[in-house]
Image (cartoon, rainbow, N blue to C red; front, side, top):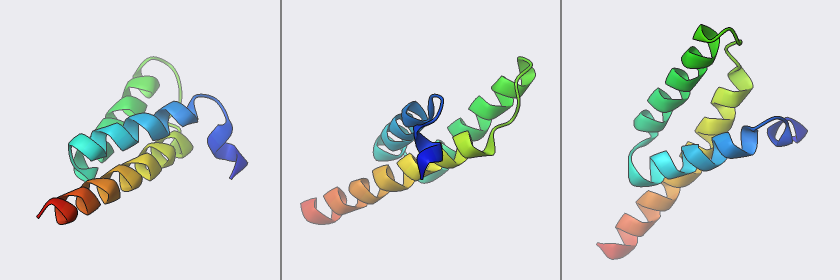
Length: 73
């Protein structure tokens, strides 16, 4: 998984984690797609690996959120 350390992908993981921790995985997905769409609109490319890195962070954040909610209840 060396691809996850390239470019700014650690930031994608972090922000995906935060968005799913305080929101939902669907919110995280929307942010990821929106960010990649914006990159494409500004002349870049739609990077599927950036999207995947964001979703990996989102899955971790959503999992932690579920664990905390179950523990509280």
